[in-house]
Image: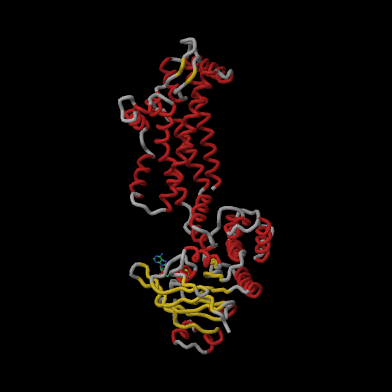
Amino acid sequence: MSSVDFLFQGIIRAFELIFSLNPYILSITGVSIKVSGTATILGTLTAIPLACAITFLNFRGRQVLITLINTGMGLPSVFVGLFIFLMIVPAGPFGFLKLYYTQEAMILAQYILITPVICGISLAAIKAVPQPVIDTVYTLGGSRKDAVIAMLREARFGLITSVLAGLGRALAEVGAILIVGGNIAYTGSIGGIGEGLSYTRSLTTAITLETSKGEISTSIALGIILISLVLSVNILANFFQRRE
Amino acid sequence: MHSELMRVYDLTKSFGNREVLKKINMSINEGEIFALMGPSGVGKTTLFRILNLLEKPSEGKLFFRGIELTVCTMREKINARRSMSMLFQTPCVLNTTVFNNVAYGLVIRKVDKNAIREKVMNALSIVGLEGKEQQKARTLSGGEAQRMAFARAIVYDPDILLLDEPTSSLDPANVAMIEELIKRIRRELGTTIIIATHNIYQVKRIADRVGILLNGELIEVNSIGRIFEAPEDARTKAFINGEMIY
Ligand SMILES: Nc1ncnc2c1ncn2[C@@H]1O[C@H](COP(=O)(O)OP(=O)(O)O)[C@@H](O)[C@H]1O
Ligand SMILES: [Mg+2]
């Protein structure tokens, strides 16, 4: 078989897997969306209020927090994975929570990875709102709360972009969830292509495994889905950026 | 015969160790158009921001309808601010429609929806922006944006309107329009208006009284007639005759 044939066959088989709604592929996609989606929602609920607090309140440790966020934005995901792994293994300080090799552990890892990303971009978006907006709200009779709401409304497209950036990073991330989730799937009739159901296997971790097993068509199918998801998120982000 | 609406007593403002305003004393009467005239950089905007409670004076007192705003509660402060409205030198446009911009002051006052619609449409027609209510405010021209900001400032019928050099960046047609608006608002609504300007001709055209601010000091407050015919301070005369170059 020539290398072109090999690729061609792989791609054809991949589309067959996708369009036949193969349960293994579907379950992996579902885990990815569930884990990254949940991490993004939790990350957003933390990051945006945090960005508001940093912008509007003057508290001690504010500068330290900003430094932490900036550092956090570039954290290597395997480092986060290792750190959480050490915390939640049975012998670790939080071992009693039994989070080891669960979807919850994956969500936690991605939450830690993307919260600084969402917060950092939100901060920049809020900071880009011209200062006179606050004065305008005040002069028109608004309270402090009205001023905060107006600032967030002015920054809305930047805030949406920050959330999508977080989601994009979560979906594409592999190192952390591989370590804390364990890349587990329940196998059906063992060994068959595209059989079994994912528990902690995401699109990215599945690709590393299937590729090393030589299941090229499965890998390609997963890759196509992953890229479609990430691309959609980026197109959306782009759309909102251009709205500004 | 005039009732006093606002009084500034020995007001001083410093930024760092630089005194920008020095012991300002003045009182504003209900229903008048008071011009605050002075070269740029003299502290007009700073004084306006203090009058509008956007900034605190370093020393001195500020009274509004007899209430001392420098020591009042947060509630009194917001109430006082809600009877005022300030138009900034460069209008700040909220990133939404013209309608929503103008409606803002009414929305935060929780005015009923139908009343908002009626008041906004009325304010827009006063400033000549009827038909533009659904346009994105960011796409307005400079003169239109200033007029929209004007509509936004008068839509809730404030007792005092603070206009900070409202025409300094406008073309003659828009200047004439804004000046007409100022006179009309006072005539029809009885609004007290304080306008900052460095334009002597504008002062002549619209104001009843004028205060001259030079080097952070209010050197003279007088009626329009007297300040041009018989100024009390030699510096006023020099300023009006254009002998002081700024
Ligand atoms: N927030 C501030 N911090 C420091 N200096 C300021 C600040 N605001 C105004 N100033 C200074 O105060 C002076 C008066 O400014 P301003 O009130 O804007 O004058 P005007 O409106 O008459 O042109 C200027 O020299 C300006 O640089
Ligand atoms: Mg000014």
